[in-house]
Image (cartoon, rainbow, N blue to C red; front, side, top):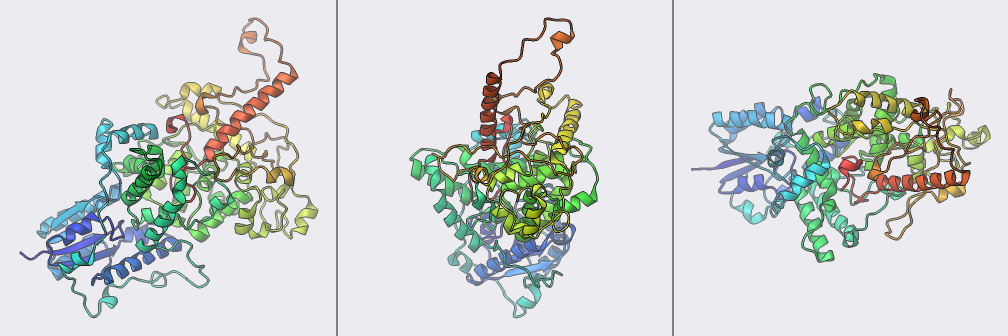
Length: 634
């Protein structure tokens, strides 16, 4: 019997570790490799030019690799359910292979394709290599429900066998056992479209910071492993200014499009660790980013409404505001906060931002300042982020907005202090918000506090050349914490409700004057295990024209539940015992003791901030948010 195979490329745009492609080659007489421009990606999804460019480059690289094996890539436009009946008849297809897609939309689409293939008498072969583990097995081991805390997920994964080892790259010898009929008009019928053909204007388009394709992915992997020598001592690099820029060793877009196999990355990290540490097995923390990816895939695989509030059983129904104007300012980098605006500008220009930068802008949009729905932010990321993955993107936004997975809403990122600590010199701001490039370092994160003479000298007047802050962060964050507290008080089935009574009120704190010298010393240390902890960021001062001039400083740390530490709110009223007629309260402690207590609390808060901003892999960007909260830290 003649076997005519068609392999359907989707998320695994590579020749290495592609078990479905291997199945297409086994015993086949002919093999054709097909990519369908699915309208779900091309039309229904809001996809920006950087994502399209990355995809087209990945397809071009794949076609180039197939050419070397005397084959080609057949790019067909249309719905898969419309395309395959025509191709099956035209090519007399007897076998169809493709990669398993764990996401709900993909499973529904593939179910329709399998049913259609059966009607035509076509064998379908499905293999998985896009995830490390069998997600259904994880759910089964958790009483047939997805684990909703990372700690629980890690516990289950630790009981599983190691992921299957990756398969080798397709070779010329394998391809020689079958043939691909290439027509003379192949480029006319099945060519890869250009950006112009897709309706994009490319005039003035900057060169790509991230070039798509398997070849680039494998080259980056080698560089990535060369820089991972720190795993020998489990040294965790600290975030600094360089971390904020796109790295030549970053891998997340390549994992998202399948240009790089997650199993190849997993085993390369594992073997490197074992070689350097001479141990039998590495800790799970070494694969943190890959495991977060698996965690969100598992949570989403059976939840078609995972990217929505309504109909999503794991999402807290928070009454977010509707403010299209505020959303547009955030998305376009016009908030008046240089740190936030620089991040959103980099995202729009390059298609990538550091994961801690993602934390900052996501918190600012949702529970931190603007109180807008995470769904709106998720859609912007879906358009602009190269590595935006449906499951990971939606899960990350629910995570940081405290809509699921994470309920410690007392923690809030300051849009001034957090940025200043990460990039104390302000070079990141100067690069992506060039209108502020001539501002002194002292004022570059708070240009509204600069005297008029300084603003004129920098040729940038706040309110004229650069917008005023769109919100008073200290007031907004305090109000939003109270809103979140009210929401969670109504949800008795959520963990941690007994701790709501200890939510601190924000107290006004004296703020020392900012100097250039203090800024130069406030940045995080370089990746060095011997470096001392960085001091906390300076307090965030509200704009001088704000209504509440005496608004509390946002330098106060809202996260009071870290590592069992609970900061008691200062009470300006009589204790409960005194109100009930009990014994009078003890006299206040001496001033020296109060100062010691404040210094002790400051050291604890400083340590918590270091843990927040510490990342395990400095140069590899990740889609997921940084793990926070006791239930996510192990």
